[in-house]
Structure formats: structure tokens, C-alpha cells
Image 1: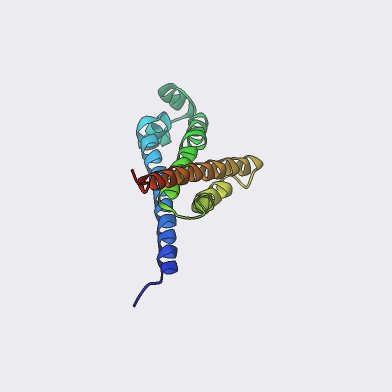
Image 2 (image 1 turned 90 degrees about the vertical axis):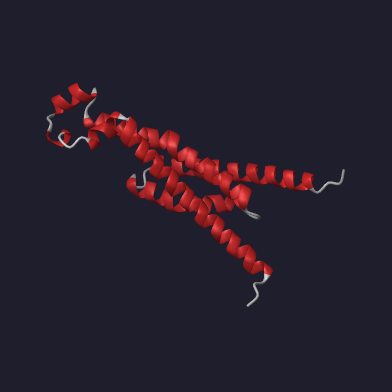
Length: 159
């Protein structure tokens, strides 16, 4: 069985999308593991006895109440991890994809963004964040595609 060029191109595009989705899931998992080890909310969650403590004991031991620690964790995810995921996925798609890399990067982020929209009850702020993350991914993919195209064009120029 022979594969036609368009089938190879389509297969590569599918593999790029799957690889980018796996990359975003991997980065998200790493960020959660890092938060569990290096933040006070993570220390609170890991300690088995902490769930039986009273609010005053928690505040004395961890320096904040549970809701403040959870808000810090969410802010860290919103302003550090999710933009980082968007940029790295955009670069990944831009370097490995051939056509429509910006749209492919946005498509790749759809599962994560749908999850974030659902977890935030489709608030206006969730839609604004999703638009920002999509724009970051689109710009990163376009920039990476332009850089890889310039390198490939320069490598074929005779000396």
C-alpha cells in the first residue's frame, strides 16, 4: 500500500497536534507536581493530618487560610503555567507543523481551554484568559514557523 503525499502531510499534522496536546498535558502535570512540593498549599494537601485541623491551626502553621492558599495556586496557574503552556505549544507546532501553524496551535489548546472554561463556569474572565492564551499560542507558532522557514531557506542558498 502506498501513501499519497497528502496522506503523509495529513498524518504529520495529526501527529503534531497529538504531540502538542501531550506536551500541554505534560507541562500541566509538571506544574501541579511542582506546586505540590514547593507551595504551602501543596504542603497542606500532602499532610494527612491537615484536613482535621481547625482554621486557626492551619493559619498558624501555614501562614494563611485554605482559601488564600488555593487562590495563590490558581493565580500561579493562570498567570504563569497556562501562558507558558500556550507559548511552548505554539513553538512546538510552529517548528514541526508545515501549514496553518497558528490555527493548529489554537486547535491544540482547545481541550485545555474547554476544561478551564468549564471549571470557571464560563465567566467573562475565563473567556478573556482563553483569548489571551490562544493569541499567545498563535503568535508563538507563527514566529517559530517564520524562524524555521528562514533557516530552511538559508540552508538551501548556494555559497
